[in-house]
Length: 215
Image (cartoon, rainbow, N blue to C red; front, top):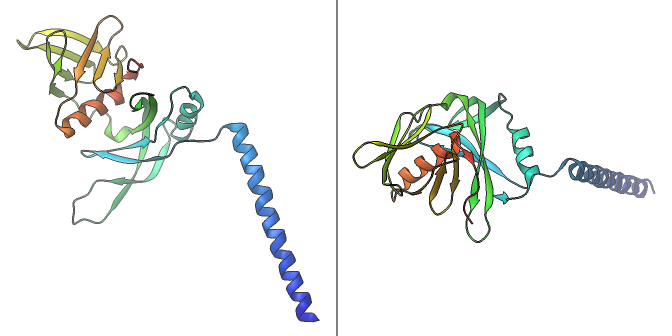
């Protein structure tokens, strides 16, 4: 009889624990529904020696997800245990970095554009500059030069054809790269080399401002 009582007590405790799990799970779901649920996942990505945070794609019109990303990766906040690139024979390395800026970009292609979010770290601010890319673009532009002030487009003779400060620059990244300062617009073909393409695209995403001009 005593053993039966112990079994009943044990089962009763199990039911209570399960009820508490369900209760707090429901409360958590309600709380998330009130505050907005994060629909994206984020992970670290490397480009050269630079580490940054990149999200999965979200619906284009879901402004709440952008607010949540900025809340998670607040400018000035410190992120611990960030993996940093090491050599093939070296042990994994980690560091603490400070978020310096967050950006949006087009995260998926035709027929329905989606958004992707990126968070960058203060420790890598400006490491890309100066940079110059040979490109194929309209308005006779054959190269783009970037520095801390912004971007300059040059023609085949090396003459300046257009320019924009980072504050002015709006971009759209799709099958090509569209750049505008509000008055002049250029369409730039991405370099065929993947490393060059990634470098050019990420540089514009990092310092420019997204304006959807694709799809």
